[in-house]
Amino acid sequence: MTASRRSGWNSLLLVGLLAASPVWADELAGPRYHIQGFAAQGLIGSTNNRFFGDSRDGVSTEFTEAGLHGTWQALDAVRLSGQVLYRRAGESDKDGLRVDYAQADWQFYQTTTTQLGLKLGKVKLPYGLYNETRDVPFTRPGILLPQSVYVDNSRDLLLAAPGAFLHGASVQQYGATDFLLGWVRPDFDSPSVDYSFLGTTRPGKLKGKGALGARLRWDLPTDTTLMLTYANATGDYAPGNADLLRAGSIRFRNLLFSAQQRLDTLTLTAEYGEPRFDTAGFGPFLPDSHRVIQAAYLQGEWRFLPAWELMLRHDIFYRDKHDKSGRQFAAATGLPAHSMFARDTTLGLRWDTTPNLMLRAEFHHVDGTGWLPGPDNPVFLSREQRWNMWLLQAAYRF
Amino acid sequence: MAHAHFLFRRLVLLILLVSPLAASAGVIVNADVEGHSISVATLRNIYTLRQTLWPNREPIVIFVLPDDHPVHVAFAKEKLGLYPYRLRQTWDRMSFSGMASAPIQVKDENEMRARVRATPGAIGYTSKDIVYDGIKTLRLE
Image (cartoon, rainbow over the protein chains, first blue to last red):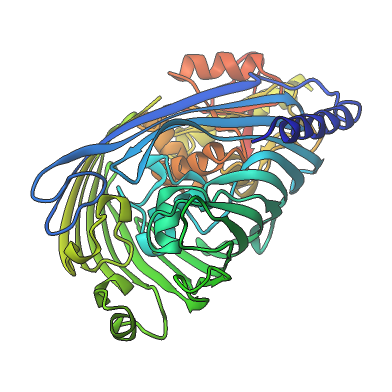
């Protein structure tokens, strides 16, 4: 981020605070700040392919997550919040410590049943049910999120970005509704994003131009949650030295449907999306393409004891909805067809040992390499279609 | 006035004797909170972080006991109709995303009463519908 843009954000923030203070000068009760955090370590073993480190026929310890989260109610109507995150995920994420998000939320309209606000800063992006807290192990349904919808390959794109969101929430007889609508400058510049959008790491730089995001959530009195997320992001490519690619552009659009039904100790969840992905202007080595991806999963969680939960999930991912088997892709490129799809069946067990400690175990049987992390498996032709993976994770919170 | 108060105490005692649920967990608020009763829907909206203001526009400050505390478990299930783990899911989702502040956790019922008494706009719960100085008990309707 450049110095000038940073000062731009600061002045926006200042204007927000000044505008807020005369109207909401009431004394706020109770503590004005809150700090919480977590640390988690995973172990991963797999057959045939690698996931987050050298897990093939061995054990990878390269899956570590830790976060420190703070909230400060600066004024009755202004809340500042942010999170510092440490994350290591094999070769796919070696960035270590980073600012996950840092935002100011100005709640300019509040009644007992309705709130309206404006979030500014490096804001969390709304995307489906789990994205905003995807790095907090306790909030996920498993050690890994369903990779079809929440692809860890392009996580940088979905995490948080500088921008602004208008948000509102209302609770009525028909249930609780909330919405988010905003604009951000997304982050396309990471090796894993290069892999998933340009096929491999490239010498040039992919830069986010802008993204529009919107989400509607409706929590019905029947313990049902319905959600609709829309995202539309564009990025430009600046070629590097001796680059085969020209200055092209990419575009990503998605309408994601989410539904969750809670029945006593059972939680059923489904999410479905058909992300559209276009590339144009990269020259002969990356022909223009318009692909429709298909991503969906069905998941059941069962709290069979107060501290124990069982999870079963089936997750499907097709890189090209019109070439699900990958045969056309294989015929055209000579590359393996199984890179065009992935079907993952997952069984997971969660034990909340104490309110502060969670232990998890998970088994995946995967058919296809559609979302296999590229940086961990750089040799395209040595990836294998069918593979298994087990994971263990211990997570502590305070 | 004193007579009515006495009658009220008698009534509370009677309810305590006849109803096993009434003794399980009572809703308490700071003395500055208006009203004598609260609806189950409002209580649930407050504890799922959807209602953040009292009707007089004072911010609500929520206190909770640890997730595995028997009084918390009873309050969550019987008063809110929610399992403690579902409450925790909601608080984590709202707080870690920066959309709301998580409730303030206290270690036991003594601290719960002390903090609710000292904090304007506070809401909490205890194991018994007993009248304490400086704290108001709300009737559930």
